[in-house]
Structures are given as structure tokens and as C-alpha cells.
Amino acid sequence: MRLLIMGPPGAGKGTQAEFISKEFAIPHVSTGDLFRANLAQGTALGVEAKKYMDAGEYVPDSVTNGMVRDRLKQADALSGFLLDGYPRTVAQVGELDGMLAGKSLDKVIVLTADTNEIVGRLLNRAKEQGRADDTEEVIRRRLEVYNEQTAPLIDLYKSRGLIVEVDGLGSVQEVTSRILSAINL
Ligand code: AMP
Image (cartoon, rainbow, N blue to C red; front, side, top):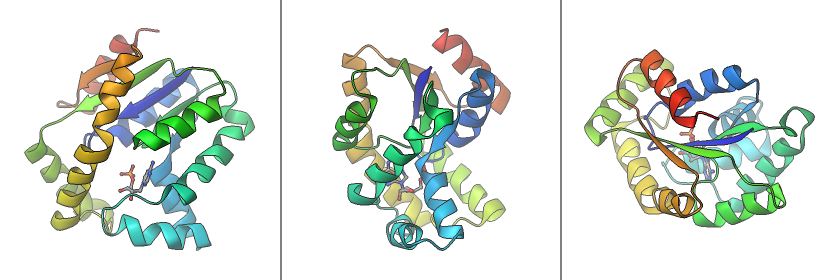
């Protein structure tokens, strides 16, 4: 099973992705987590990515695509995965199509949430987890970048018949069961 979860920053993608990947026993491949793991280990890729992440900008494709390509080649991802945070641009969709070599995603889950709710959630997460990219200014920039560069992917995947839209408001459990019944694979 090959799934992608999308939605604005703060919609709860990461939390939901954990549950869904457990449910289907597929690895959760989050580019944000991969960047943060690289940064924690002090790799050159992590140091490079941080410059962009801290500003709420997207990390360049020259860094991002290769990292995803390597991850999807690992044994645990060969029979399926849940992508979280990639692709985020139309160009990355083309890259992913190439990596999948003719295979299609099965579903693209879009978590929807309202902007004010999102900003509140992210400011809360900043307090709890201390993420450097969760200041109000950076949050607003991340939402802008999402709307400009990532939201258009919804129509693109709609034209392929893959989109399932799920309301991201509610308890974690409520949203998980909404997702599971919406993908209904
Ligand atoms: P996330 O944890 O998914 O919110 O990602 C955190 C940050 O990592 C984003 O704000 C971007 O700076 C960077 N990032 C994650 N995924 C991508 C991607 N597919 N392309 C470019 N930058 C990304």
C-alpha cells in the first residue's frame, strides 16, 4: 500500500501518520522527521536543511529528492509506505512519479483545518516540543508557502482520482477513524 498524507502545517499529519502506518504495517516516511534526524546527528544535509526550515521555507529539491529516493529504496519501504510531507511541490510530484517507476499511489489523504486553529495548535506545539520553526512569524510564512506551492497538488492528485479529504478537527482518535473509513482500501 502506497499512501500520501497532505495538509497544511499543524493539521495533524504527523500524529495521524503514526497511527495509519501502524494500522497498515507500512513505514512512516516523513521528510520533516528525516531532516530533523539528520540535524540531530549533525550531518551536512541536516545543517543545510536547517537554514530553510528555520525560515519556514522549503529545503531545495537538490537536497530533498535524493534523501527521499534513498529512503524509499530501503527494504522496509519496498512493498509500501506512508509519505508525510513529500511531495510538496509540483516538481516533487514528477520526481516521485519517477521513483515509483510506473506504480501509482493508492490514495492521497488531505487533512483539512482552519487557519486560526492551525496557528493556535502550532504555537502550542512550540511550547511543548520547542521546535525552532514554530514561532508565529515562521508559522505564517509556512502557511503561505503551503498555499502557494503545495495546495495546488490537491487538484493535481484529484485529476488522478486519488484524493480523499478528511476533516482534521476533532480528537486524534476521531480523525484517525475518519481517515480509516475514508480510505477504505
Ligand atoms: P514538516 O515536519 O513536514 O512540517 O517539515 C518541516 C520543514 O521541513 C518544512 O517546513 C520544510 O522546511 C522542510 N521540508 C519537509 N518536507 C519538505 C519537502 N518535501 N520539500 C522541501 N522542504 C521540506
